[in-house]
Image 1 (cartoon, helix red, strand yellow):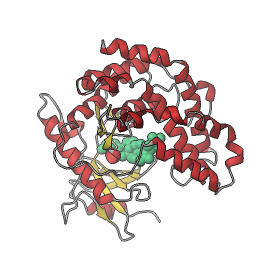
Image 2: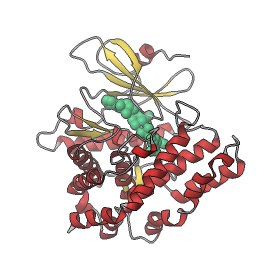
Image 3: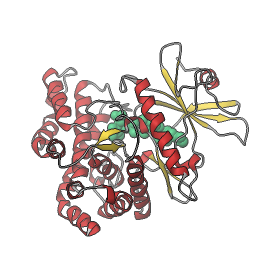
Image 4: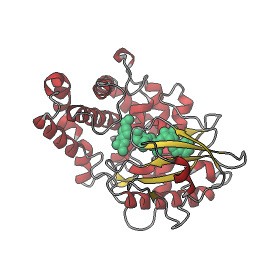
Length: 366
Ligand code: ADP
Ligand code: GN1
Ligand code: MG
């Protein structure tokens, strides 16, 4: 049944009259709607019905979100010339309780943000300038959250980027083969399994105490960065997975998406490759903000991060395909498998360019 957006909107402490609500954006996880208000001077809003299959504890997730947006708001407000309303997400409270979410009659959770007007977002990146800007805003995000006070953030999805755990799940679903698809994806399974040990490098360094857990975004896919009309990066959105993690997760996922010459689900595998100029520009922007917070081992392993995140996504998409497509939204039956093939193609290309990737970071930190 279609949700009654007008009624749900009325439960939040928003300004303006509901004019229209429609599906919005490219997200794979929540149901996202843009609410347009009747008055020109009032903001529009983003209303989201949250995916509680993916996020099992929405109250804890929203508590993270309130702490993170509150901290960012205070710090950004202190930067001369900043525009807090456009450089930070604004949660709209429930009219009755003041909480940052509501539940509907079916027990589904909803939340609302002020819509960042007149923004741009990109699935792929066609200029070094946009890449630098994306890197800068993600590096700044990391630096601004380094002094978040209080207890550690909740793990909204436990072991989200823990590749050892992801691989356990992967092998478990292969054993069950619930949709009878394993026989048709043997080459892809082999590509994953032969890289398993190499891909545990980052968690191994963490366990050895060589790299620290930080507050990371964990979903720095390029379309989660919003730009203004002059292509200056405003902010990074989609804060559901902000939680303790390694810096490599943020750098890696951004390169995976920004430096790929085509979309994550491109039908044309020959178009998939990593643009090293985009990698360089993103790294430059990222390090311009984050380099002083990183230790030598963290920077040394930055070039490895894009390979890891591309591999993690290949593993997750393939797990979901074998499982019968229960996690990611798909638009056609082989959609997840196409995503797997794109990620594996991209990974092979990163491997081919790895020496250059290392050299670029070495030059930037010299
Ligand atoms: P998902 O986890 O499903 O990707 P997001 O939180 O990223 O959900 O939101 C989905 C899309 O909605 C984004 O890609 C973006 O286009 C849009 N969006 C989300 N929040 C805002 C906002 N405050 N202002 C403008 N657009 C937004
Ligand atoms: C999901 O929410 P969205 O669409 O930005 C996923 C990410 C993946 C991405 C792949 C909570 O991100 O981990 O990298 O799809 N988010 C979650 O497109 O699983
Ligand atoms: Mg998103």
